[in-house]
Image (cartoon, rainbow, N blue to C red; front, side, top):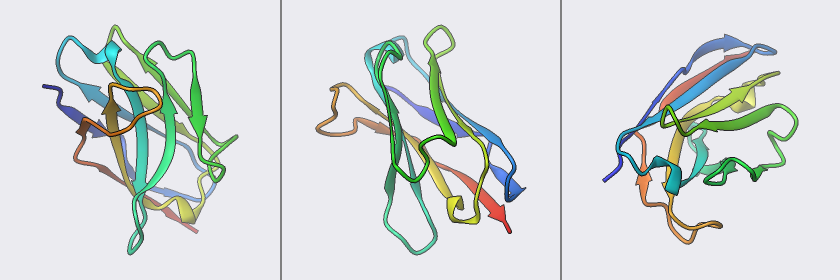
Length: 120
């Protein structure tokens, strides 16, 4: 069993930066590929970024490529999402998810989400 807890969200102005964290419980964190998703108000949940077990591979949605960076610290059981040059359209609830397979066929665990609001 893995529990995921996101933090770091908030209200910022356009152009600002934020770093989200997702802390995982359990000793098997390094066996999971980690993902960030977001759900803008009134829209479907969408993929943002992913990182492999070791951190050697990363993938990004086109909408965040070059602005967001996903990373992980397996010693701290934490995955991060560094967000820069934030835009109002980045406003969403951000979720982290863990998947045993890479690429994932399903997501085994989800966090509860953290709100990011970007004002213009």
